[in-house]
Structures are given as structure tokens and as C-alpha cells.
Length: 198
Image: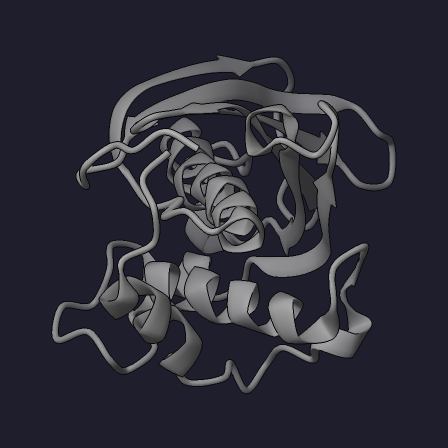
């Protein structure tokens, strides 16, 4: 694992609280204070939170990703390597996300997969005391069905593997009303810090 540096840990906890997030309304098995910190990090990564001098790509879409649920599951006798972070988001498909046919553009799905999957690694990292942020190495994305303009997507991501600096997460985007699988994918990324073992 890459342990949290004091600067990054402090930074995460001093990000401005997202005015559009009420942590008490987010379902999940972690405390509301941790839900708020995770929400603040997601908002920072997708919009800059007014802190970054560089407005992130497609922040108009990113700011509409709504956290519905945050869970940390213990799978292997409490060791971080066996634990899993799970993030559930929702977003309505609007015109700005669509192609000329009125369905969600493939590149929009790829864009949303990025911060959504990183959020599950950040969630696990905050719970287990390591830096879950990373830089992308590889995305594998499968488009199964079109997402229609006006539909609401449920995006569920899980951290699958975390060891040293390596992270692997998976994602499913489903139509909220029908449960139909729209997009699935995985995202491999690498933390830029120095790896340490637990």
C-alpha cells in the first residue's frame, strides 16, 4: 500500500464541503463524517471545488454525479488487501451527454467511469489509511445497450485489487428503472507515491 502522506490526508479533510451533498442522505455502512469527506473528494476531482486553478474536463457532467451509497466491506479477516470499497452514483442522461441519436455518447460513459472508479479506491484508502488516488494505466469498457436521453443511470463501482501502488476497480452502469446493463468496465491505475507494505 501507499500510505497516506500527512499533506494528502490533511488536504482531503480540508476540502470545502460540497453544498449539494447531505451526507445523512447517503446510504452505506460508514459514518456520515467519512461520507462527507468522500463526497468532497469526488466533487474536487470532478469540478475542482473552486480550489484548483484548472477547471476539470467536463465538470458540468461531473458535478451532477450524485452519491447514493458508500460501503466498505471486510472480506479477508479485516486486512486491507481483502477489503473492498463500493460506491453507488446516479445521474440523469441529459442532452449534453448525448450523441446525434439522442443516446449517451460512448465517450461520456468513459469519462464517468474514470472518477466513479477512482472514488471506490479513494473510499477504501480513506477507510484503511492509504492514498487511493492514482493515474490511469488502462480502461476496458464494454457498451451493452444505449442509454436514452432522460433516463437515469445507476453507476456501481468496486475496488477489486489494491496492492502496493497498483489499483484495479470495476464498474457497471445500469438503467435505474429497468436494471438493464448499459456499460461495464474495469479501470487499472497506479499511485504515483512510494509503495509500502502493510
